[in-house]
Image (cartoon, rainbow, N blue to C red; front, side, top):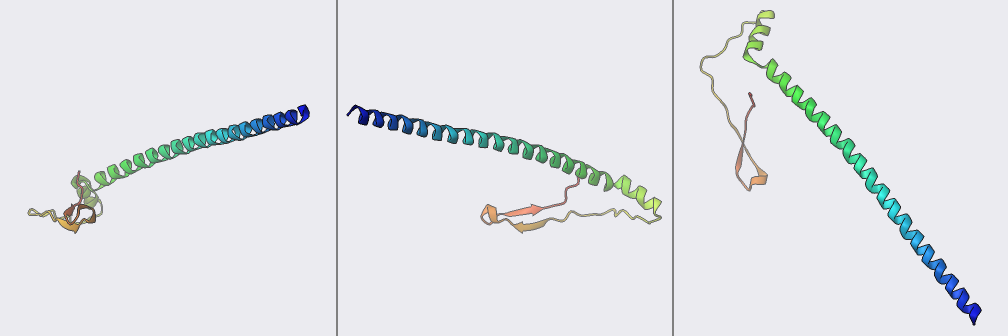
Amino acid sequence: MKRKNRNINKFRNFLFFLSTGFFLIIYVLLYLKIIYIGYQTNKLKEKYEFLNLLNKNYKLQIIKLTAPENLTKIAREKNINLIVPKNWCFLEIREKNEMDNGNKGILEAETR
């Protein structure tokens, strides 16, 4: 009888350590996965910031190149007769916006 209780206690201890080890391994794996996701998020954030800075630089270059002073300078260098119209108009292009439930959005060129 004592031997049977002893075997049952050994088996219970074995199951306890086995289940504890299993949960410990799961915990460590989840913890490492969280750390990995944190590093990936940080890398993506740095890439986003780099691309955003690059986009701002390109917008600045476009604004500089399309400035009227620069256009007249380039036209003089290339011997192109640039005529600046005295009466110019602004054109609105309207587009149906599906997100606004039928409201119309305005598409326009940015000149800042």
